Length: 386
Image (cartoon, rainbow, N blue to C red):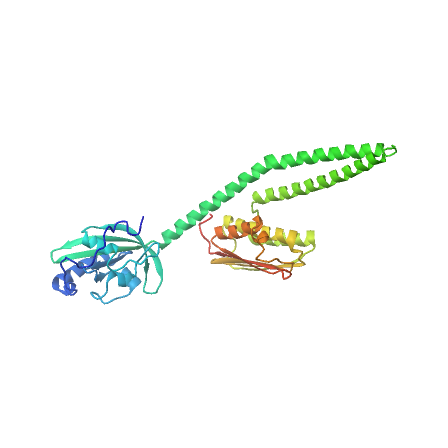
């Protein structure tokens, strides 16, 4: 909805309208009204603010006072009190706001979405409703303010959760498709090339005493070519199987133990020395979060295996109830951040995207010949990926 969808004309406060002095609420009738307001609103969890027809604040309940401070009533307008803005960040001017519209059109407005500023300077998402109150001595406006920051956060987390779930489902579908088509086709091609190479080799050996030495040489050359093609396909099949495993990956242990196990594999298979340092004050996080973090770490380890030429890898894990931080540092060849062939590679983007989907942040520090350091920060436990 447009920020001013309901404001069909510019209005000015107090123009062509009755005015009542700001001291009205201090009269005997005003005190009666204040007592009534206090009885109705003071214990409410939402903020309630009553204004006169010039939008000067005449009453605030305890919640509103906690949020905005105990301002001198009658001398501050609602705009000065809450510094309201639209959800898009546009300031609502004092002569062109929802409250002005409600007063001048003798109407009420419900659940306008805004950003308001508390006395501490903290900005919160708020749903604000305006109730027009005609009165024998003038007009009042009741502004009800509900803090919806937690609701907005949950909505954001739900959206991120849905996006992550869709991503996981799509990757599982891709894995199935690759297994049922490309992987089987490549395996069949590999078998046929091996068979053809064997036949060519046998034919060459049986014809080795023949007078046509040129034909024998051509056959040997063909056999060598077939051997190279066969080895290339076998390597591609291994890579494809590894990718299929990654796409269907399920964390079967605790995240910290997973990191330790994979660090040990680097040592056993590649001779890369590793060290793992853990500071853990809360134990395991939700499975889905740890599974995505495990995928991230596995991708980094894969890059180290394939490209880094590292001799040592240092891993640090700091896990507590508020956040999890993982740092992976290697002393390998590094790369230039400006090299798009590296930063736009699927593996690189996958690392960054997975961390973002968790509401976290991934940073990498690297230079050619200076090694690479990945740092991952994931905020406190949430229901986002539960």
